[in-house]
Amino acid sequence: MATIAATAKTHLLIGGAWVDASDGASYQNRNPATGATLAHVASASAQDVEAAARAARKAFDTGKWSTMAASRRAKIIYKIAQLLAERAPALALLEVRDNGKPIATAKGELSAIVDTFEFYAGAATKNYGDTLPSPMPGYFAYTVHEPVGVVGAIVPWNFPLLLASWKVAPALAAGCTIVLKPAPSTPLTALELGKIAIEAGLPEGVLNIITGSGRELGQAVVEHPEIDKIAFTGSTATGKMVAATAAQTLKRVTLELGGKSPSIVFDDADIDAAVAGALYGIYYNAGQTCEARSRLLVHEGIYDEFVQKFTERAGKLRIGDPEDAQTQIGAITMSEQFEKIAAYCKSGEEEGANRLFGGTRAQVGNGHSGGMFWDATAFEARPHHRIAREEIFGPVATFLKFTDEAQAIALANDSEYGLSASIWSQNLGRVNRVAKALRTGTVAVNTPYAVFPGIPFGGYKQSGYGRELGFDTVRLYSEVKSVITYMGEKPINPFGV
Ligand code: NDP
Image (cartoon, rainbow, N blue to C red; front, top):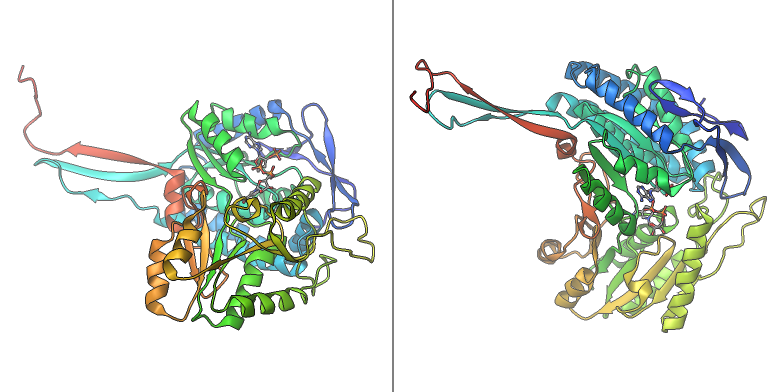
């Protein structure tokens, strides 16, 4: 069982060995729902990043993984999937204690994580190149996809193991080696992934994991000259810094960043289905979701009915003990995030938005008085209000009214972000017109579910670049090499001398 005893001490994974931070430092990692100490986590320094990057480089350069037969690589990735599936219940519980999310949510994530490793196990044997039309008589040309090298994978705290899997699985499929940096507040399931990877037969040094609490750690990964690519998920502000720093060594970069995604509800929608889907779209994972549909754009003809039904059903959501199978909204993962949500709710009131419900700390008893819980919240806002424009990353919905399709599209696209959108309508023509007009990486029609292994996920505009989860994602962990062979009988002598 992948359980970590209270106050357990964790280690870094470097070159196949579990080691202390080089200076022996550690920090306390807490359960956000109770405030209890969960583990003493090794706190890596730039020196440990150096050791991890060197181990990953060495593992890459020896070719043990990068030139291993793709079918063998696939079997090891598939074995990782199997071990994850076997340990899913314990891993889900560990994620709940580390992150504060409800157990039902964590179980769903574990299932998606297994699917992700299975998908990329299959992709490992299909990273095909092309044979190309001959550029001149007597020539034969083809491309091969080779692994990009060492990948620095930087993961946030909202979906700790899920977002690690989105990077680790395709990187392994392409033949890369990895330095994985989980977020400081949620490192525990990544460490379990490290144990599973070793058990599955991943050669030493292919997956290295560094945990730590300082901002400089991620920076050291992005700066490191031996790292060839950065795969980052997090805020747009940090993503910009990552891109700027990575440019110094011309690293390849994939960025999956913030969002302010809309649920667009037309007057021809199935209103009850739209209400149920829109509730999930914003309150799932307590709104700590990059693709949270935090803006609710509703047609004026159904606006009052929609708001009334939404309010009524939001009141039935169960907030509380994340380990209770009935809970739907768990704890806010970090105190900084909790303060940020509170500040946005205050700013909404100050700017004149109309608070419909929530906006306060949720009172949760039974041993959770030390936990950070926020009530499901909704405001009616104007498009210029900060709560209608900026990523809050909490259970806060913002309602805006529209009069026609053109205004709905204009409002939806009036954002610096472009990650995701849901359209609610029974009119096929409208659905496809609007889907085409939206400047977002994903459009979910009549469903809040927007993320599946095998379907590319990523952003337009300042929501980032590159796509995760798709088959082509393996290409983003590959370099294309063109091989041009002259096969003619007559030797080539361009200068004729
Ligand atoms: P960040 O984007 O700052 O952090 C995400 C990850 O990047 C963490 O592992 C972090 O580690 C690391 N990191 C931070 N600074 C750097 C850097 N200069 N170079 C490389 N890596 C770095 O998000 P926060 O966790 O601070 O959350 C702040 C806000 O970001 C949230 O309120 C939310 O709005 C948004 N966010 C959005 C996410 C999304 O999926 N769209 C995910 C998480 C947050 P460390 O913590 O050690 O600095």
